[in-house]
Image (tube, rainbow, N blue to C red; front, side, top):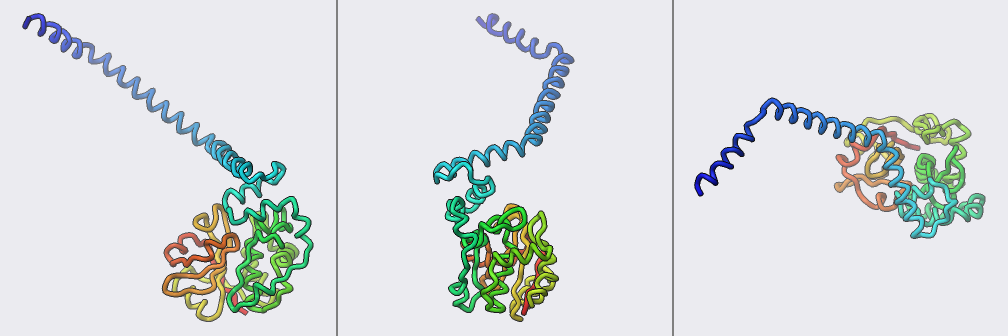
Length: 274
């Protein structure tokens, strides 16, 4: 019994040691095939990633649209806004009634009742459907909306609103294909009786300008406030952080933001005064 058991084991061990060169070649071939497969897979994924993400995003947007019974003829950009920001739901759902808002008079007396900088949403139905360049204020009008908030705070002149401010920006060349030109915050504001200056990204500098009565406009990178580009307004600070008016979300405007969280998201900033 002992001989019957050990003989096959010996043969098995001899088979394992057989053809070392052939084994090496097979290993190299398998390794090359594996590397090629993953390289091809990665290259293909990189090539088609935009299409994949687009398909997924459209599928998610379609699901939200179906849940809310949004008509299919609504512009894709409005559906994407709804996907990114549920606060704009009423604005999106009323798209088919936009004509009833686009030419109505705008009353901002309620917003001017307090002493704080008024918080205005770019997608407010009172002006959000009105055009801003090739888009509309609700989708691309963060710049005019921020400037309106600052202008109202400094002057109290409620004849200027995001609709009229968007018209001002367009007529004077401050609208670009990318949104609102940075020159609005220096050259443009001077035409409205305000003073604007680029300031350094520094916590002490920002606090100093706010202490002096200025408001700060920030151009934002993708982060907590945007996935592309955006303008927000900073109007005060305390030991808990900076106070902001985000024209796209009330939720982000209700929070306080510490400098470290804000600073890495800021492209540029300007101090506005009157």
